[in-house]
Image 1 (tube, rainbow, N blue to C red):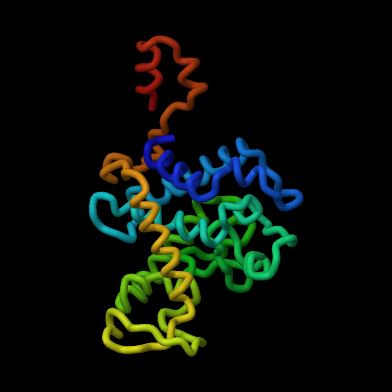
Image 2 (image 1 turned 90 degrees about the vertical axis):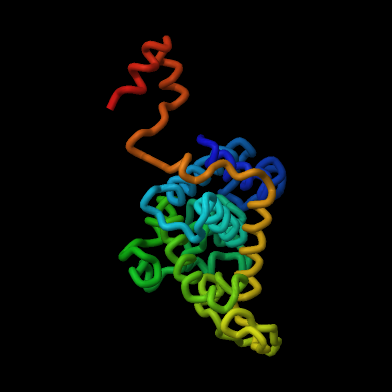
Length: 257
């Protein structure tokens, strides 16, 4: 695990401590020990790193830590959508969950709670065609790529109304749609106006605020360019390194195509 994946893992442990969660009551059939949770968190952190630090990935933010800010935003959303729960991560969501915490009645998949259209993803909404719940549950990198596509679309549509409105589409499907009587001060294009509070504003703003707190919690490794993910040159595993032996053998191993 490199410095970025380790940083993401540490944020996950802070948000959802494996030891405390393992000691608390768990959903029947989805029990985990603290060490099993830690191992799963490591896999999640690696998948998020692979997606957000791939050279071809377009970040939500610019600057030397734009990818880190993107990763923290996706992680904050994933936590508030799922709590990193095992059933929501690996699927299917447990039927023991109460309404409101039941993966949208079993219709959403993965840590980012991706909702499908007639049982599959579609290009305009998800950035990829024909992926099912089973596909998303079985491939965290796919889940994070879909999540990033959806968040990017939400940012592109809603940031013009103000930074805190950027996730409204992700949270509710619309930047401005409201069923609420309460009014709030507008921002961006609506600055100076009182508008009905958008349905997605509360949830979206909470996720953005959590992402900001995560970024303030510990120094961010980087700049991003130092940690780009290059799958064509993976680091040798600890087991492989133990088998290498001498420095000369290690140099020969690392030079292999």
